[in-house]
Length: 210
Image (cartoon, rainbow, N blue to C red; front, side, top):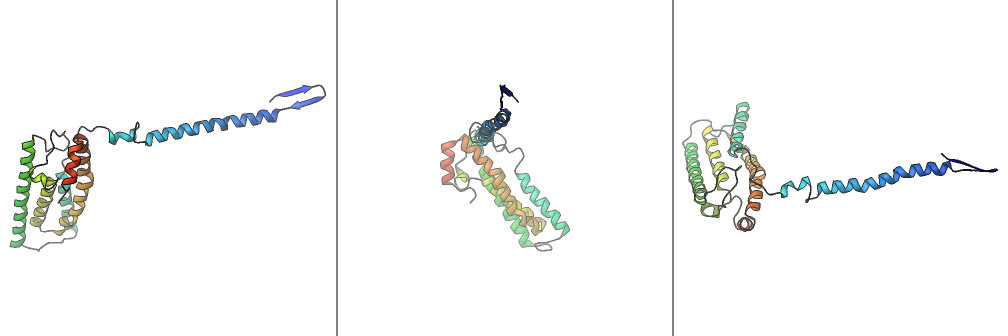
């Protein structure tokens, strides 16, 4: 506060000083506002920020567990529910049920062997957390992009028939949804970066499942 005395005239400009002090913080806040917004915008932007990690080159699909465990979890959960509330398919020995289980088991083996043969010919790995060295597009992979996961679904049905319970079978759609959204999407994102043009054309030509 500053008080000026000029003869008989008293000029008191403390109100001006006080208003100036009030305006300075406001100006500071006004200047920091855009700065903070700019930082937030940079953080959320797809380039030059931590949020752009999805765009960074991937060394592997990033699946650090065997995908068949998801199928096993569905069967185990179904058996637990069946233990609490039994829901048998036939309720006893059934030649038809075991015959269907045998057919599914053979179908699983043939489909898995066909997919494994393509991977071996291309000299690439089956393990999803390791980098791919080649893109499998021939053989069974010319008809479906994920014969391995289809074969596991067939094996899942075979095991369910042997166990004589509807509950694991009722959980199969949820298991396939998890495989599709959690596992396959990560693999596709990795392969699209690893083999950008070839894989994009392959994905347009061949279905994900059937």
